[in-house]
Image (cartoon, rainbow, N blue to C red; front, side, top):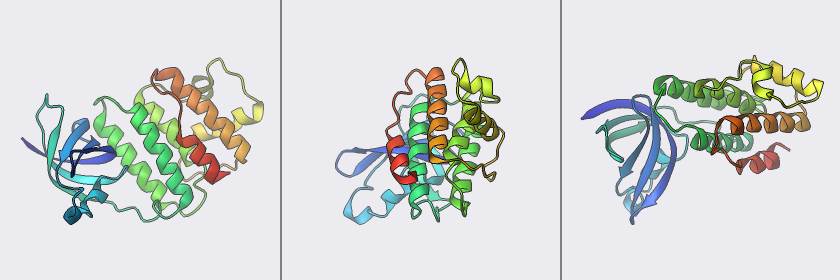
Length: 222
């Protein structure tokens, strides 16, 4: 049966000589796998761009309830990023966000709300004209609420961990901030808060593990 839905590309893997299996988080069905044939052939080289991580898509898809892999009938990008691909800091943030999503978003509950949040967040990052350095910290805090484990106050985030007074004050500001709120942080403070947030995630998600993209952030953000 055909359905119209929007979605966000999480990742793709090569399949056969010219095809891919792409994982897309959709508004209607949550996280889904689709097989796309022929996109890696020389004559279709531009189509692979639609399936790069975090691409925002309008789709018409075939959906069978118990199928492990479905197919896409029609697809187009509804919001081409303007700054994320060319701004090195935003690109690093996008790599980090994509790794977080692949580690945390597994089921289909609250798919519509979560999909809307992700789409709005990525467009907000793309539209930022300056001061995007704290975006990933606020993103983690906001995402945790949609994943069902809180981050509404300082105690929920820190748990039994103690931190210095200044770090706690800044973290509390971030918990209540919007993306367009600028909170001045040093690189050391930003790293300390990120470490606390990653421990917070690991407390709630058994398979969270190590974040490889943190090193990319450090290299780019300083």
